[in-house]
Figure 1: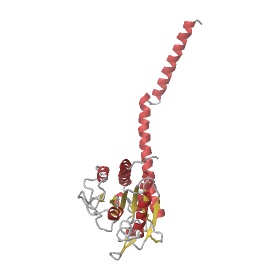
Figure 2 (figure 1 turned 30 degrees about the vertical axis):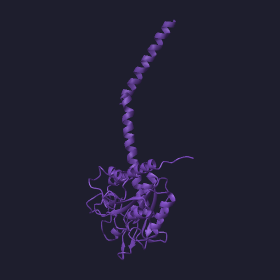
Figure 3 (figure 1 turned 180 degrees about the horizontal axis):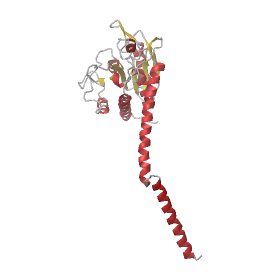
Figure 4 (figure 1 turned 120 degrees about the vertical axis):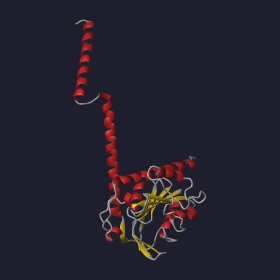
Length: 295
């Protein structure tokens, strides 16, 4: 076969191969280069769903396995180390005795497990009540919990405290962010208020100091601002946005109040996503304000 004939033969083979592959692709219902894009979107959606399901599963497992509402312990609170200068607090994770009012109060369900999960997602430090205690870590003028918070703030150079609490489902809000006052000179988080507001901008119209302002001198938010010299905010979360699945030993279940209550998982995830976002944004702002320098 002559040299030119070999060239013609080779080009013919390449042409036929291309036609064959194109028909094979069409036969499989594929549309060339657009298919990987469609598959990528579907895969991303599946990953997000699996990730959300995993977060809800972890929150539930923490609450069921680690938080003992009505079981006392000398070491009633837990502490988890982090790697950013933010401390997440859940002082009412279990049953507690409010000394100023001389009465026992039930736990704020799932606040401790939410705090732990948020710590995992952001790298924040976490302190939380895991057992029944004869003091109110947040409301008592002095408590072992507050002493532990103060120690952590000094030792780990904490710049912001996010204090998580629970509200009944009958409250007219999803969240209520207590920042002591709306006056600029009295706000408990002047440098981070806009970040918090932006995080919840599409969540609900009103946000700050709706019912619980955290302006009592004994709250952890006031304690952080006036005694520790750091910024803080108190987050009251409606039951419908935190209780993944009510435990049989919860105060409400024992009282016969919706013992089988389950929040909508997407609502819980929407709340977690916003809290996670604002924590990371605050950390970034802290880092810009206090850049790490190398000697």
